[in-house]
Image (cartoon, rainbow, N blue to C red; front, side, top):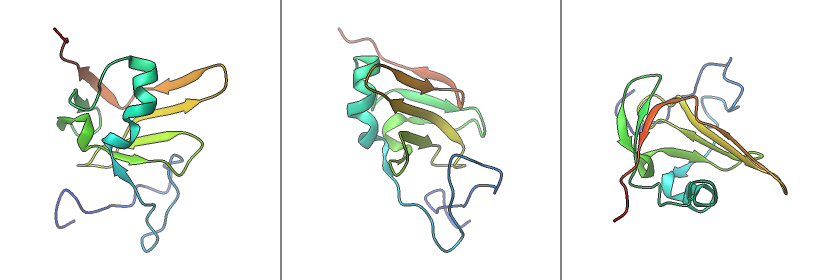
Length: 110
């Protein structure tokens, strides 16, 4: 890989994303998930710092790779493309998986 911003295709065992080396799925930055996540967190999550459980990278959530071409939102680490977060909204529930984050550091509003 030439830089951290290059897209690397995850292992074929990764069921959260299905793309080939010459047909990557387009993504946007973490700002695209802000609206949906504000319904769950009731805060602005964009500036929150998160640590990737896969590679240890610490970045602002707004820098993450967000894939919206799914039943919900899939958020991946910009450095290793590891899964950070999944959010699916139904008419009565939110399903939130944060298993790819070691932590999420959120500043308190004053």
